[in-house]
Image 1 (cartoon, rainbow, N blue to C red):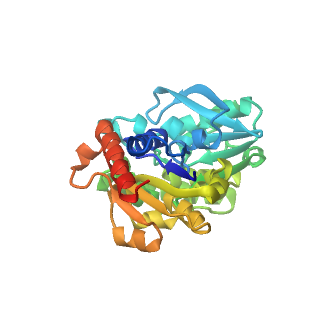
Image 2: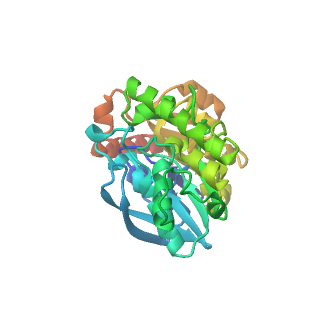
Image 3: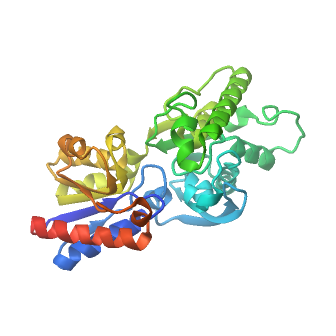
Length: 358
């Protein structure tokens, strides 16, 4: 019997990749318990990245969240490389909705994850950028690294950051974001409102980012603020590129290659993928799109499930055999309820199984 692959990304603020996959499996199994179902944890750099990349070598630790409160976190080590997911430290899902404030949120905890990995001997890092509550251009992370490794007092932030030392690290950034740091398509204007920023806050964050990048360019002698991916994770992408010569790669492609799904697709009868919201942005390199493009090479049909679907015709004309809005008719608050989303995924999967006579 040919296998059916279940590989959904997380539904942000609602379900993890594993939880979404289980709901789909339960729905399909309710129709046909004998189906050969294989589940893969997915991420394109955001939530679930560490689990997707190295599920068998997880290290648990304590770091500060975006509001400088202690929180449980984890990172992985694979082939001597540290696998770090910034959302483990400063994820938006860790901050209560009423307390989200990008003006004060800090990426300090990301630096703590790096420090702890370095204490384990790691000098190569794969950083999953996504799902952060921050818009501080990585300043918090840089301050943490300064505090951890340099004891001399300095008047300015750039005096205390030994760029020669940190350029010895090899850093690869995994993300689906290609936005620059500043401008109408930058971190402040595009992503900060999703993190609780008002229009006035956005203007302040933009001025802060412009000031920081100009100061850094003077000190460094070059400017990475316009590089693709600089705006990822509230500007953390910029900090890594400006101070550590980080390379940016597709998080989705990296995960597909690392977890064996690239090869597993060859023998699949059907692939079911999904994410919280699917629209034209999905077609710009997000996990479901990368998966669908790969599956096309083997003529394997891909079904897309999402909590909210916009541009359904564009999604289906691009290659998804079906784009299913599991929450059709529900209010956003109701759709984000974990129990509701789980049941909707189960029901949609059962309906799909009946329709396809799996």
